[in-house]
Image (cartoon, rainbow, N blue to C red; front, side, top):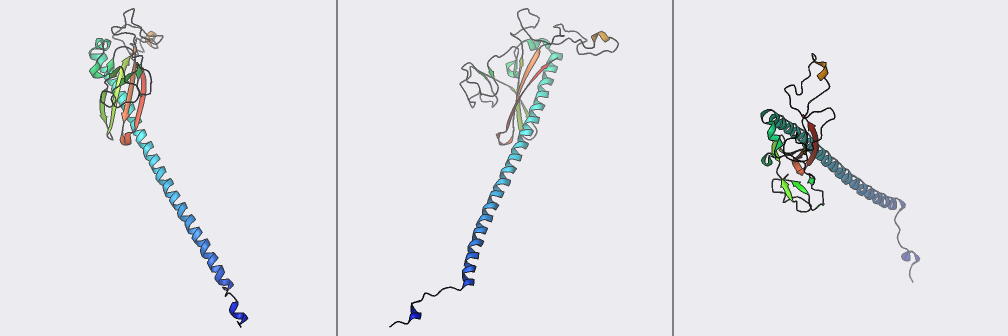
Length: 226
């Protein structure tokens, strides 16, 4: 006959069961803290990447602004040395003497007649969109921080040739004249009649694209007149 005490299942003391529950909660806490640490590291890493990309973007914007200044300097030099030369297209200099209606500076147009700009110096082969009907070369400038900027200048006239031709439509400010004088751009306090009245040439559209680190790209357009 079995003794009644031999059929009883031994039980753990209360304090042993409490230690087991504490260990379970401790493990859950460690796992939660580990997940939080990983999330924080990923967040910091993502934030650093974003800040770095913004810095690269700012560099390309500043470079594009500098390239615009260089394009304006090129126009000013042409105005002084050979103003009649701006009446004709200078393809190798990235200058067009008349409007390009289907110009697609950002390669986003889906038009079959689109005209692209050779930003990557590869005859537009690497650009998105339909095959362009023409690929316009641009002037290239190497700037600081290993940034390459290219610009294209388009004179806003309906056709090539002098703007004084009646058939050539070139928009100008309301107070502008098509005449070219030696007092162009001059402000003379002794002749107040000329203050506020100017003699200006045509408008020019300057399209600039700057590419820097991590393929960061900035494209800007500027409208100028002289």
